[in-house]
Amino acid sequence: MDNYISFGVALTFLSAAIIYVTIKNRERNQQRDYKQIDNQQIDIELIIYKKEKDRLEERLRKKELSWENFVRLRIYLDEQHKKNMEQICRSRVK
Image 1 (tube, rainbow, N blue to C red):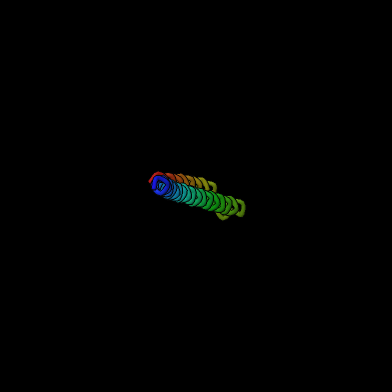
Image 2: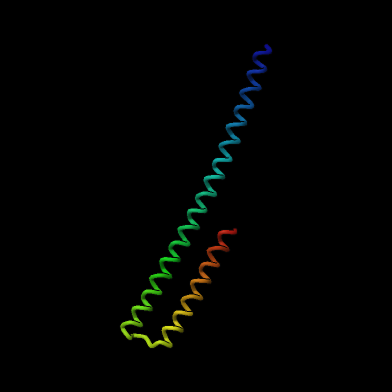
């Protein structure tokens, strides 16, 4: 009879340990997935910023833009990039 009680206690403890580890692993995997999504968003934003910057410089070289317009558009592009990065960082905190 004592064997059955100790066996039951051991099975209960083992079941609780398995459930605990499963829940912790799921939480850890979700956090890792969120980090990967955030990193992808940052990578995409940086690629878009670089492409837009290259387009502006190309238009300046082809003399489709004046220097003043280039500077104005470049400042605007930098501000938009900064806003987008702040928005990504804010969404990361939530």
